Image (cartoon, rainbow, N blue to C red; front, side, top):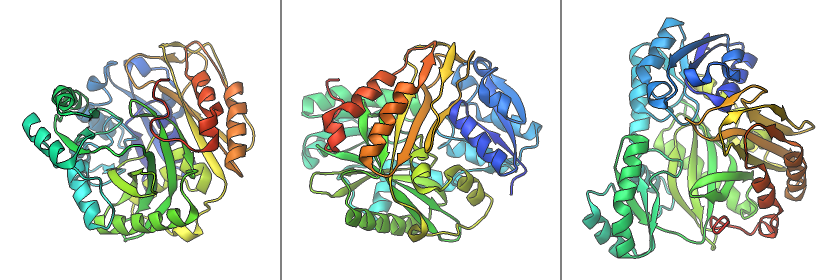
Length: 435
């Protein structure tokens, strides 16, 4: 097992990883930009080291500075969290060259699976239904020809990265011509890769993802599905598990297919396969995320499986000792993402307590929420016996959660879960349109 882990991230995910390491008896090192000098993750870690000024490109995205910091403090491994360098094959390679374990898939796996058009081909070979689409497009002319063959509406997507960036729908050839350069530019700015591909736009649909753990010994475990259909501009706002639209039989069939596919792919670590579910109940594979998801806590409180600890164990060569049949998939869990809509200093914060409630955050009185990074400041998660109960529980805890000093989206989350369409469970990815 690793003796010391450097966390190459910030905010709530850095705090989450540090706490998991403490429970495992592993020493931790926090890195921080000058904007995060006094934040919670630097106080909780055993050691902390500044890696640069506020802009992410000069700090959290600077691979050489992070590896240099790890070498300086003699860290045996680096955990990248999510975002930033978590899916960067060059960073994983740099870690390995310097004798530092990267807690995640190998650079070779990342390169093989980060190209979304390539992973779709692999998934199809593994027996998953794949949305009709293309490889990376060379220009708008090729895109127009492909769209004519696939049929409108279509969706342009970034070849690299995620988080909704680079995604542009098109319903006509003229619209495709207009959005193509926008998608390329956004992809280049966000991921340093302007490659985009095209796929059929399935609508209406639900966004369903399956959490997996897989080790180097051929063990693969699917840990249920999360419904991530509540989104704005492809940015998730709320997740729940299990999905109210997935029956037990559908779930069992999907989990079996995913486990088979993961074994065929030969993936090692924690990962997520994302699908679009159409009205007929068909699951269409979209992409695979080769990292920890923001919403991983929903699966943790539903199943009792600590995904961060298992990421670390798998990276250290520990085999997974359990199967899907032994994992609890009962009850209901839900997460509301709490975003700061403005920067500012936290004057006061009240976190609700009680059985089966969890709030992952880096906020405390005096914390400065900077304008440089992602707006996520916390994730409120609850678990109970039924979906009806979990909605009531979430309403109660959202009302109790107080964050003073910045404007947040707490009221909007309350509006979402109080909407009759959401309460009925009959919603899809169009839910937030017009809101």
